[in-house]
Length: 114
Image (tube, rainbow, N blue to C red; front, side):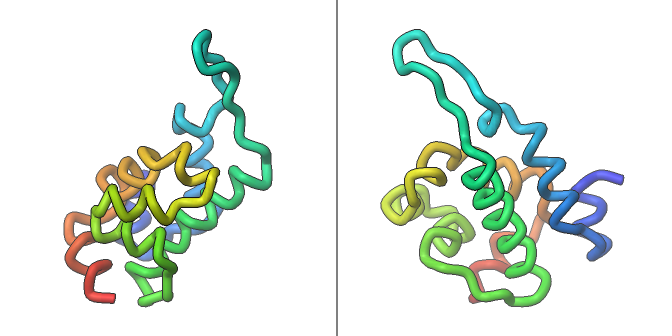
C-alpha cells in the first residue's frame, strides 16, 4: 500500500514515513565536483523523518507544529528557508515532495487552518 493510500486511510506510521524518506534522492549521500560531498548523519535523517511525521500528525490530529513546518504547510518557501535549521535548509524539496505526492489533495487547506 502506498504512503498516499495509508495517509488517506489513517494508517500511516512513522516507519512508513521513514521508508519513504530513505527512497528520496535528496536524503542520500552524494558527491558534487564543485560543492563536495553531502551526507546526512543518522541523527539528521531521523530529524527530517520526525518533521515529516509531524506534518502528518498536524493534518490528522491537529498536532502543533513550529515555525518552520508551519511555513512549509503554508507553502511559503521564503519563510521556510528563513526558519529552517541547517539540516532542513539542505533538504527543503523533500517536504514539498512529501506533501504533493503523499498527502491528500486537501493538505494545504487543512494544514493552514492551524
